[in-house]
Amino acid sequence: MTQTESVPAVNDTPLVPIEKIVALCKRRGFVYPNSEIYGGVAGIYDFGPLGVEFRNNIRRYWWWSMVQTHDNVVGIEGANITHPRVWEASGHVENFVDRLVDCKKCKRRWRVDHLPPENLEQNKCPNCGGELTEPRKFNLLMETYLGVVEGDRMKTYLRGEACQNIYLDYDNVLKSSRMQIPFGICQIGKAYRNEVTPGNFLFRQREFEQWDLQFFVHPSEMQKWFDYWKAYRFEWYKSIINHKDRLHFREHGPDELAHYAKQAFDIEYRTVLDWQEWEGIHWRQDWDLSRHSQYSGQDLSYSDPATGERYIPWIVETSGGVDRTFLNLLLDAYEEEPDPAGKEPRTVLHLHPMLAPVKVAVFPLQKNKEELVSTAKGIHKHLQRLMVSQYDDIGNIGRRYRRQDEIGTPYCVTVDFQSLEDQTVTVRERDKMTQERIAIDALPMYLLDRVTWK
Ligand code: GAP
Image 1: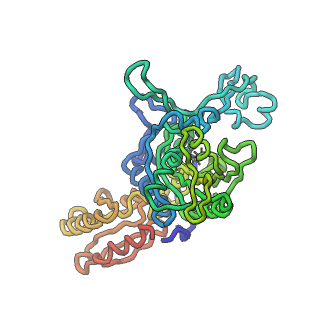
Image 2: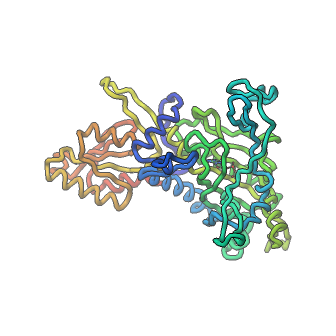
Image 3: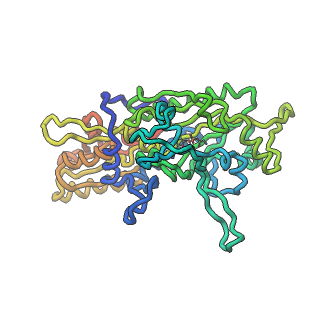
């Protein structure tokens, strides 16, 4: 499936409450609250056995489409801790702040930029109508310390945005690879923010993961590349969701631009949380390399080998969240379908097959028939080398289908008595619930063709 082909649209369904996803994630081992036995930590989560498979698939697809399939893009993996001066140069020490107000009556705390305009104007709490305090500034950078000897310890920060490593490594990449401008550097990595109002499950966390492309261009080509990556990223998201009409662009107004951006568009997705940012496309211009040149004393200008022209490259940034992708894809894929037989509804995740955590489940029709069991286990063992496969012989076939539907497994294979005679199996597809008979020999290619990207 190419990037622009996509999963078939499913009937439009109501927006899914976040609580349904939280419950499914806990029940089936996608996501757990961090340090739960100690009462948990707001805005920090761990990923379980299915969550880690899903996450890896999401990351791999991004890497494949951004790095592997572009001759002019390479990847790096930077550390979470950097020299503290980085955050002065980047502007985060000074500008990475939320302005907060407290209600004098009910004591609730609000981000000024999240207050409804009428409450802002009248200085009134949206909860109880009480008077609000004067705004105070809170820096979002998470502090940490290097060194063990008191007095010699150096204060620094866990990275507030992952992309800073890309600017720090830009010159090394240029010198150690054969890249020439225009070219890009990609990275997937953790970022940390002391969010004052973490919440809505994975949507706003304190530790989360970002994927970034920083694309370095000659200033005269900025508009061309900005348009290219903006369109490319939009199509990328469109290719992995069912509800295409829930995706759009929103341009930032002048008062909401980040300190580094001259122009910005958010790719937004609509959920029960309304339209919210999924990824930002930023026109960072020469902000980052100029500031790091100035603060480090290293000349980060580029000399064009063909013309000899020397200039500070401008940067197009595409910056999205792995966790927000994780959450949005589950919200997009979740459906409770009524059962025509009037029993429990079928809960199904219509995930793109290439992103689903488990690709195939293999069942013997009956678990007390040795030949069916050994044939099914043999098929499972073979498939396991090629993709994530599960063997299941608990309960009846209908229950097994339900268990796999709920985690988005696109194909279920059943070994029945006919299999023992003609070496074929039944393959059942998740969304349409259609069944096909496939030769056991042909099964690996049949599945690979449908669950891997190309
Ligand atoms: N380097 C640019 C940058 O960091 P950003 O808009 O602050 O830009 C980029 O972050 C993406 O990271 C967002 O579009 C969102 O998907 C994700 N993100 C930001 N803050 C987040 C948080 N607190 N929790 C989860 N994801 C977050």
